[in-house]
Image (cartoon, rainbow, N blue to C red):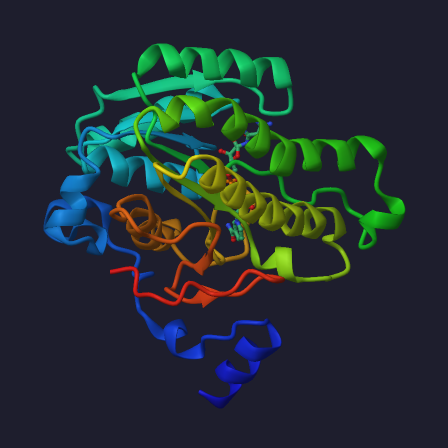
Length: 297
Ligand SMILES: NC(=O)c1ccc[n+]([C@@H]2O[C@H](COP(=O)([O-])OP(=O)(O)OC[C@H]3O[C@@H](n4cnc5c(N)ncnc54)[C@H](OP(=O)(O)O)[C@@H]3O)[C@@H](O)[C@H]2O)c1
């Protein structure tokens, strides 16, 4: 416990007590009807019929979140570059007995702003108002240098910043007015511990996630101030480690992120906005953003 507390304080996590809420169980997706990924019946019902866009939905965390949302009866928009991976996600749903008729696939490259614009036009055509976005897609550091900020190429920097930072901003910016029509907005920006870190070897990725943290909190403040009558909840989630395409070194299941993602997406009015959370239930601090000081469930 002492070690955990020391780590928490070092990492700037001020509300240590809230670190201990166990919401990151990797529920067996086959058993979704029994556990609803830990969500109460009321919260589970809130997700029914809501249209939610998950980027990077063909693999890893994105796939798990898309599967759980489809199980809850949401209309899920799945995007990523590889269509076959997105189709695979809908097949995974089917294999768990989850209806996938309400899923739409849009394969495009987030690095290209024209493709983002086209995808947003397609989403506007699919739904009267989009309720949620999970900005989950990202690129890892890549390259084989231990010092990418010194040895990396311009192209490497550009790809990471475009995918991890520019794309979540541009996509959310385009969709926000459409979402506001529904008076309720739920957006998750999937960040990383890297956004708090200065680890050699991951410089560009660290920068992209630290900037994403600021983008998300600044964006949340802007959107809520300019739309005082709407219920805006745009928050930041640290998903922690799990075995996915970008992280082959972890033994954790990516389903461990589902509980906290659904809690944020299903939160009723008056919930957090511009706040930082960890998949294990911790309420985090980032720069001047104070922790969310109320319970989420
Ligand atoms: N796994 C971990 O341990 C860990 C830890 C901390 C944070 N995270 C964060 O969790 C999120 C999900 O990552 P993951 O671990 O699930 O990794 P992943 O399996 O590699 O997922 C990344 C997804 O992003 C999509 N993507 C990448 N570039 C894209 C582009 N240009 N256009 C459209 N889609 C693109 C990929 O699909 P295509 O290649 O088909 O486009 C892929 O489905 C990321 O934000 C990551 O930074 C993960």
